[in-house]
Image (cartoon, rainbow, N blue to C red; front, side, top):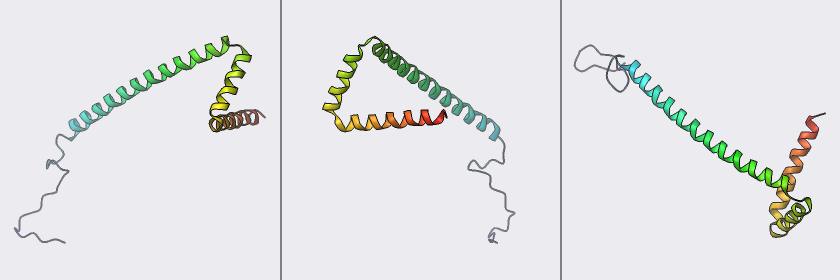
Length: 106
């Protein structure tokens, strides 16, 4: 046990404010409101980001629907000539995903 050089009774220490519990509920409430606001802002940013990306994917999908299959094949060949490593990795990833989808349906 530690000694008390002043021989006065020890008072319990509470947190960093020195208060004995008074005012903690409003502080917690304020902190919760601040975190709630930050979470709401993050959710809004995420929603906007996803909406933007969905729009881009939708536009690309429409372009693919309207494109000629011969033209798509030629574009794929040209891409593979320019970036063979990346084309190989994309092909492997697509094959893996398709394999998992087919295997999952059994």
